[in-house]
Length: 85
Length: 247
Image (cartoon, rainbow over all chains, first blue to last red; front, side):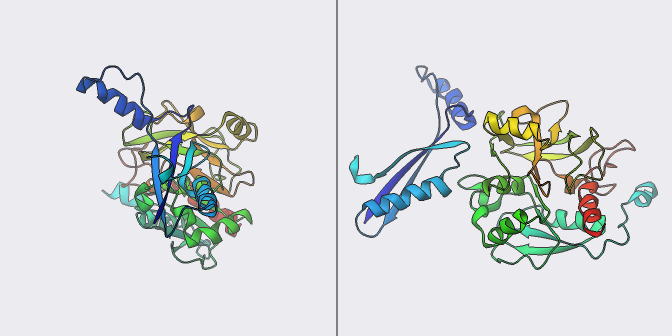
């Protein structure tokens, strides 16, 4: 079984309310060194068999059409999960 | 209270032939309120189901509010690919009047019938309040019964209500007069340029975050000039489209 990882992040110029909430909570736990937090999404798309170039291309199209909204988000990575541990 | 009863919105005459569809997705909450608003305005509401690629020959469509598919992925992102949306997108491009309220507005943006997108409110909390809006465009099929510059009060209730778009898209909307409603007095969610609702270029597709269908009958709406819960400022959305259809 193969697995494709898709990472989606809010665009840098878009306010990220969830990231701001996490950033505000960190100091309360003593994590005072982090100056900012942005929260994104990680998708894992599973396929039977290997992750071929065709599978990656389909995952890229899925990432652009459904998994992200280009108005507010950027697709950061579409990759075979085995390429990075 | 007889005053409230006597003041109740009566269906307009002559409009009963207009059939207005109300779409229900899994997680839609305000479909019954939207159908009731259609009825009070004098038309016949027609329930439409998300899984049926069939508009049943309706004359207009309302996409109501709620949390379709639990807002999973992004608000409106999964509903946008429902079978009913395939036929709705084509019909809207052909001129069918479509109104998206709250989650329905989010669906229209995800379906690219309207530009931009909604993200979480800038204050990060759900908000529910009676909201004053300025009506800036009365040339759409959903706003022709209002007066330009008129201020109306209807409920606002959402979590992902912050309207965002690229600056050049916002400039285009402003230049073409496609900002239909702007928040008055206070921006409740951080929306760019206080935008509460917009239209497509043709004026048949309108989306807004606040809820006109909750302000259509005296006794059940926001506070109005005549006393508590007397506000019916939302009713003219529905009479506007009916007068377009039967006019």
